Image 1 (cartoon, rainbow, N blue to C red):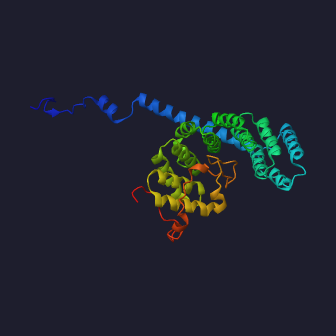
Image 2: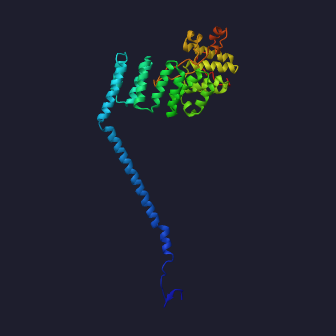
Image 3: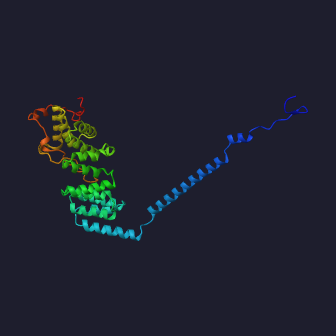
Length: 329
């Protein structure tokens, strides 16, 4: 008789370990609780985000308070006092009527005044930026530009370093500081400044030129040449690039190619400008303008043009964009 039968009738045994099977195939109480906790946390985060977005929307759509209106009126009054009577006044009024934030408006006004060489008025606008936003990096940068225009490089350097302390990625402050350091032949300091921010330098043409100039003067010719090559491939219309390419090629013993680079430099700046280069050793970005004012980056004693240069001009290839920079060529 089969085991487990009684009087010939087999009874089904209850399955063993039923509780274990249920625990394996279904969530335990602990797991259910954890899931509910996670769902609760997600709902709370969604609620917080919704409240933040609602407050932000209300902040943007709510009309300005009386104190804000009064503050903006005082700012406009000061701007009018500074700029009234200047030829640029109508353009400044148009900027004031824009929807830009106040600091952006002031920055645009500053750039317009500096571009017109209204140095005193521009300085007052920069002071006004810092009056409104004492920790504004762009405010300190603009005071640095004013000091540069006045030839006070010591003061300009202090302002630009302050701007970079506040905003280390402010590339225009970095470029103007590099310009000052190169101009004062403090090339090692330029390298230290720029190499700490190579991710920014490699994305900015002016920064690459400033660093290349410093490398050249420190006899790091291949480093300079590599950077100038990168800039040249992006833009062939920058005189400083052709000039320092020529310097590098001369150092590398590529005399003929150097002469061609010098000819291209002269073609871009004009014969008179090429014969009397500036003594300034850097490239500056003096404002937020899309096309910044630049300075010729060289020293007179470094231009090495042979007496036979005029003869070589006829040998210049018809394609002015022919690659000159690869060392293998």
